[in-house]
Length: 432
Image 1 (cartoon, helix red, strand yellow):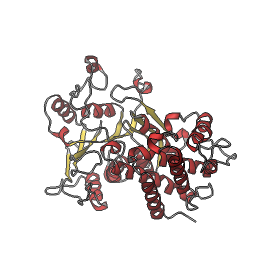
Image 2: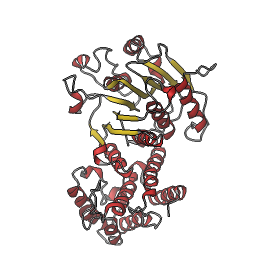
Image 3: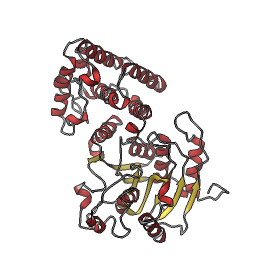
Image 4: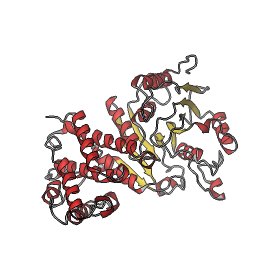
């Protein structure tokens, strides 16, 4: 029997929220997400020898082995040494930094308190409804969605601290819709294949997964998914997220490193014939990030034709990085603070060049207070290297939203209106 999504989500969140006590959501999310991960891979691949699973579960390191440790006075240390370490040793892609410390007294308390807290955490995932064994394929999507749901709840619960790694689903839906339409003729509808997609500030990977899901939902095919993330914890979260959504090891590549310094060796290929380029580029980079570019950065191939973004705001540096790796026939959609549309100085020069060269296809103004990490209004810029229309489409969606307690919300009808306006390039008074 399939697990009912709403029941699973609400019971998981209620149990976890009750459990965390004084712990900040950004801290305890690591424990909950690890438990969801180990339960899933134990159920799905623990007894697997007939095919190559994405994660190998060594003998003695499954969820059942964690259950056996409940009540043990040294439970935290035993989880670290008997479950987590063998997992790392058996899987080349996993590292110690992927997992939380189950013996951390600062977060979990000491003695009986730690024993009780970890026992209760394990008990949440013993729920019979959380059975992800391999003959229940219909539960795969639910598992991935539950992971996404929890990530969203954590981001909401701890504001700026955890919100940075998460693009709200409603905004993710707009970007994924744009880049999965035909890049040159959006009005013809969804594209049949998307050979490659790149998110250079991928956070927990939710935007990349949204694009993958939309391509498959439209009956199309998607090639390899590429992501880059600077924060080590979030980078690990993205890789877990891919595995939990059933993305095979060979179908994605996530790199840990600084995007602005272009630390990914593969992207620094100097032979033009071998330079990586992507059919779709998407990103929700940190807004108005302060950076310190060296003088030599002015000669960097990514920036030399347009200029360097100012130290006070790296927004255009992120944009130019992604644009550099876009295929001639590709499409790029990036979320930026509203200020990129009107700020002067170096940013004005970059913006003017992009406009005069015909690379800015669409500008979408969104409402304020959509994000967990900031209340400022944002925009989506759609860029193309070779675009058909010689005009720029402006969509003013800033007043089309539903007011919420913490965040404003874009309802399905608001999102559909933005996408349809982009697709057909329609004009409407005070809107587009």
